[in-house]
Length: 106
Image 1: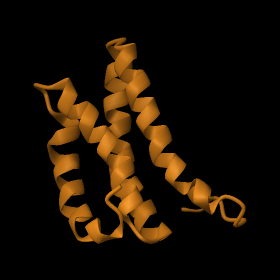
Image 2: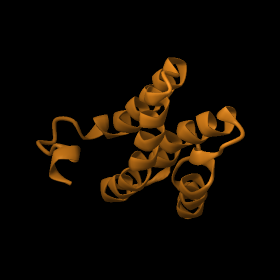
Image 3: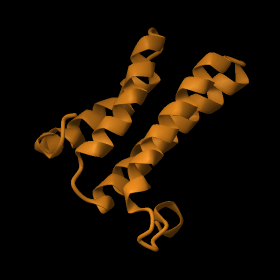
Image 4: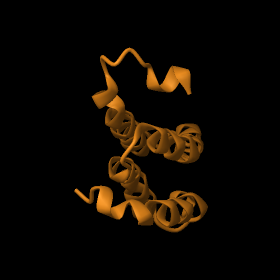
């Protein structure tokens, strides 16, 4: 676990993730590992507002990739991307019971 010490690097890595890694045309492994990195970056951020901001930046790009793979009927990749979306959303489970629904309110 990288933790809060890594918080200074989250923004540059996210920019690289969005611009290149999630949409890499040559390697499916690069795309797969980039999607895995999203939940790790979310865990590095210290507060909920920063996590939501990051999720709003990354999630549309993962969904674009998911839509593309569904159209091509690449169900193995669809399953992997759905799993990564679940991992990203699971980060917010620590806010459960606070009376604040993270995704509906933002």
